[in-house]
Length: 533
Image (cartoon, rainbow, N blue to C red; front, side):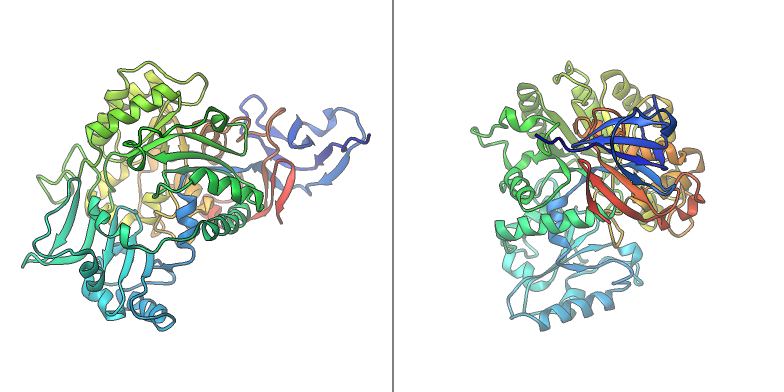
């Protein structure tokens, strides 16, 4: 019986993310796992297949610890309302008209990614703008943050939204000076439209996920968290089916608790929770507040230019308590979206009353975004072993909104990554794709560049004292992200771990920080198999 030879990867510049053995130039891979990493001169003797890395920089595969892959896969088939494709409301109207020309009256037209700060007119689209693109079919454009939608008059009519429609709990319908809906629906007001949108078939969803896997591989991404799928479909089943059709990335799934909490029969089978398998269920997600770019994050001090505007608290006590109860009983993770200081304090103070309810290094509470954490919340997070999953790409790509809503000085204090690390917080990086104001939202390199330079894409200073070095940034995007997402034996290049790694076009450890986003992935390996390049 022949056994497969181990492969020796030699002549590389390997950055492992393993603090005990951070730099190496050779690596042995046997089957799906790494057998040894170190100095080539010290490599154990043996008969190996050899791959010459030609002096290239190798890093562990990126783990995007907070994204929405099913949504991203779906959005890739819709209008992208972002630069460089759409730079103005006129461009957006044109794109809508182009889609309408290809389909029948009455069929939905959908787009995503608008950010008023990036549009030439410096304002959100409204129903009348969208009507100019198309008035005989319903149109919906999702804001980049995912917390606000804009619809045209036809969509408002179909949803029955009029001047007399009251705001739902935890949501707002924007209105003009006469009280007429403008077409902008915030937070829970989006639920008027959601049931009317066309449903993608399960087969289409699975094919879209397989296609997305190829894009992620080209970006060096070998693991992701699906941090709350915006439907109650068979999320786990979609990934298992996609895996059978060639999808390769590791996935930690967080169910959106809003869809399941009143279903008394909802369970997570124990065998789905093992983080060492390709697809596993990590836990639950709830949304505690909105976004800074939409002025709906629930903040502790009012928004810029206001004395009484504090955003929206979105998650009811009942929903939060039922999620905590479920996670304790099932020993799984609880993820809460909390951007503003008030939202962060609320979840940290509540879960600090509980003992850690799961048994390994995976944090039992992870807080998403954590844009303006208070010192008290930071201290309790360290004391109780919580984690923050944050996104430097936000201030980088959405600087116009941050300056408008927080002002320049307060913007510099957002996402205080250096301070969090200095105080011992378990923190990781991610993109929140597609809820990211960037044309290719899952690309890790602009996110790394933002963390290392602390400048926005337009050159705005976003707080130099909170910059981190590139080695730290990579660790937060690999090792820390894997731990916080519950991906076992992943995120580091060390013996016994999955052989997930990327070979880069340039040495990201030595390129000028402002050129980090020009680095490309030449090859990506998952479980020792080359999946890109």
